[in-house]
Length: 73
Image (cartoon, rainbow, N blue to C red; front, side, top):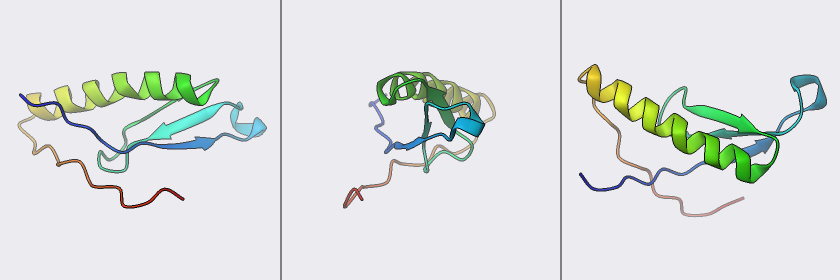
């Protein structure tokens, strides 16, 4: 199977939400993770992506193709 690369959005969390950063994967509904630093959030979301894909395969669900990112704001 070819490797899939999904865009990830990194956003800071407020102090009320515990601080740190959240990484979300817009192409995979509900797929997200967090970390104390942006780098940690990215490392953690890689695991979340793998778990999301594994669950989709086990449930015989379609796996969306990664969207293309035209620009980063």
